[in-house]
Amino acid sequence: MRKKNTGLNAGDLAHPEILPGDIYKDSRGERVTVKTVTENRITFIREGYSGECTSSLMRFEKEFTPVKRQTFGEWCKANNTAEKITTLRAMIAAGRAKK
Image (cartoon, rainbow, N blue to C red; front, side):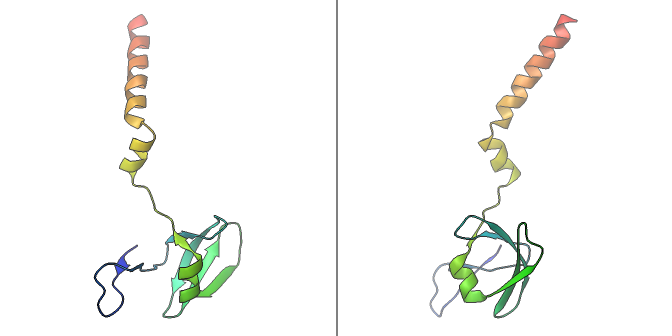
């Protein structure tokens, strides 16, 4: 998701640019995936629904918030993956030493 500058004197990045494939969530926490984006319309799919939904750009920006995707490194740090790997290696080495 790229950011775009808006306004004449925009000094900072104002709104994220909405691209196909981006994932957003609504006020109830349900996730939607953006399918197509035009100048004034956004088509998206709700999880669990087979039909497509359309919304104006302004309404979509007001009602939905982007979901931040985790990188693999962030996921590893959040789940203590390095510690788990060292524990498993120690268990395997101890099992091999018994044989």
